[in-house]
Image (cartoon, rainbow, N blue to C red):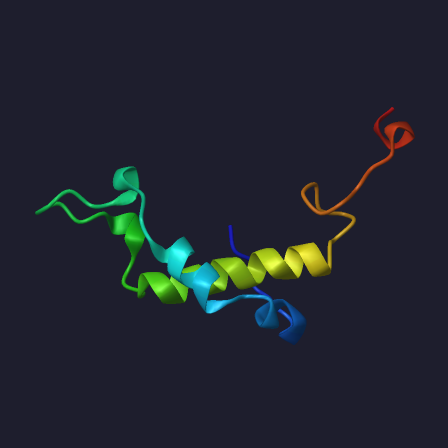
Length: 80
């Protein structure tokens, strides 16, 4: 689920055209069957969607949220 905050300039700078191009290509199982469009694809250009996804991923990498299960690095004593 995408976050609601804008990625930082540093995160945006890490998103390359090559990354956007490769991320925007749909896998065969993601492609809509002819005559049956996939509502999950939405109306946005796949490259616009890919750029947003990659920028948010970069933002989580650069500025990890310690309270987020995906962003935090816990120690073994934190799980007891």
